[in-house]
Length: 413
Image 1 (cartoon, rainbow, N blue to C red):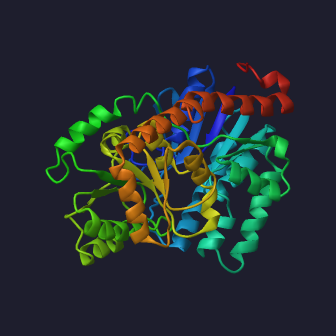
Image 2 (cartoon, rainbow, N blue to C red):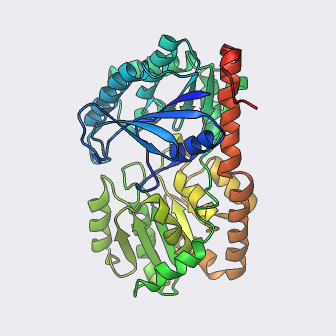
């Protein structure tokens, strides 16, 4: 198959951030399919006028310079979304394909996805990474007339999708509520890259040895964006409470975002910054095994927003791949999974002091920690194995093509 893969915020392993699209695309290439990725050069690696074409792991990547970061205001983000969507639509219709695979966020990726599919008379498979527009509405990012416009765009995307991929069971339920047929929805969550994290603990030991403030002390880490929705200031408050209970426990945040300075100022005011609470800039995905291998517990955090409970945070699955227990401060399917398997714990987003006590009890129970490590790696190997989930995506794409134009579905098994 010739797969036209649309993802505005595609990352390579040398970049910080989520590499889901890279990992899925390269596996599709390895299965004999041609994959053309249409994306934005949001980091400014080329600053090229027009489209720049490169190749990685057999993927043909088309880049368009459209700056974007978590530091942008909501209106500026929407302008970046629309600029890319319109330029990508004009570009994508000229790339011959058998199927379009468009992955959100943002929801505006549906514009080039649907238009390219209609122009070439091929099916579109739409991937939902977050429930849009429900989430930005809940966050206050969409207001006034933008809300009904976003609702119409969402319905248009689903109506024109031959299949939908949801990143969690709860997202699938949300899509069903919009009237999309459940039999055409496939859940393919974020995944664990087992090979990348195979030697995580060995690399973790080296990471620990390089920091005098860490050594063999317990370490709680957060890796990812410091945006408003992540609420990383919660971890600062947990660290401040923990310092009173167990001053040997260390906290590390690896990442950046709009609330970077807010988190840093709070940590300084609570007198934990560079004492028990440390911050580092983001690192490439390929270096993440060292951090998570060093961690005693990894965290995934959000503000108190039930709309986020359906999330499929990549950091959660990276921790599982490293065999590192996970602590989260929200409910939903991941909380149910941790309770069922013992691969981690669920903290109270409203009670940092109580969460610190619960976390400390977990850190001090070596038998429970060891069981959680085994449970985490077992989940990575079974339920969230990237190789198996890539095969699942291949089947979804093949089904869409077979249903739409059987003669085009070569290389499908």
